[in-house]
Amino acid sequence: QVQLVESGGGLVQPGGSLRLSCAASGFTFSSYPMSWYRQAPGKERELVADITSTGSITNYADSVKGRFTISRDNAKKTVYLQMNSLKPEDTATYYCSAKRTWFSGIAYWGKGTLVTVSA
Image 1 (spheres, rainbow, N blue to C red):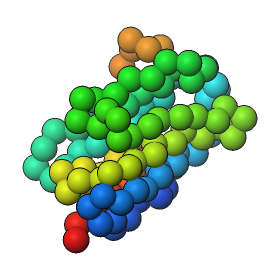
Image 2: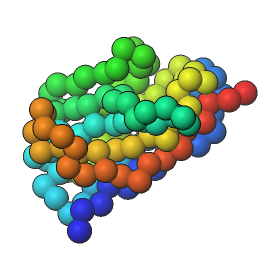
Image 3: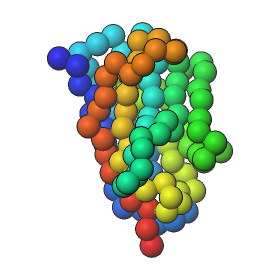
């Protein structure tokens, strides 16, 4: 059974940092590119960052470039999202996802973790 379980969300003040984790099981994690998406209330889900299966290539939305870092540990079957200099507009539910190839659609989704940036 495929599972993607996010953790690390919470309430943080503007300018603060959080690190999200996503633990994978039930599929060959090291073969799958991974992505983080987010969805704010009343808005569409958007891509935040993705990373190739080996971790050699990463890609970021313009809105988070220079502030967020995606990484992975294939031995631990975990993907991370380090979020620094957080802004109120980063408030959203963050979802971990896996895709079979870099250009394919999402194969698996996690259930999400809520990040709230507020003073």
